[in-house]
Image (cartoon, rainbow, N blue to C red):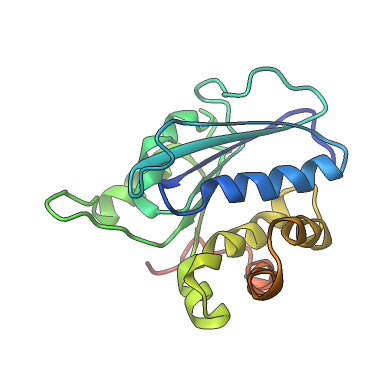
Length: 201
């Protein structure tokens, strides 16, 4: 599996570890010989604020931030955040949407209904996957902070990486107990069935 150019948009909330997710994926891809460009929005230090990051890899790359309607994959570590970045999805509805079922509702702010969310998602993609990442991290790994690593394990099937590649990248990011937790989370994510489209969230 090779790619001339592949773009991933990652969105979520400040404090959810998006930069670590970006670094771990980017390091694994660079180790495998791909050119990698990353970028992120401002305000990353503000916990709870919405954050968008960009990861582009391949043999031929240009600007770090993709054009509207050109992204191959969008990852949302908080469910409603996906709505902010659907403009990057391809018009032919081929973009893969990887969405954590995690919800962070803010007091006095409206949260999109499931009916509305699904309607908008299906207008933009034929490849929608809901991943119960936080639930798996809490129940099987016993650490909620490993939710992003569960997502990484799940998206491995779509990327030119092996599980061993991400394991090595995790070893550069973590040590001791934190490493053990994240290695387990990676395996749990990788074990998930491909078709999570009908997951009841």
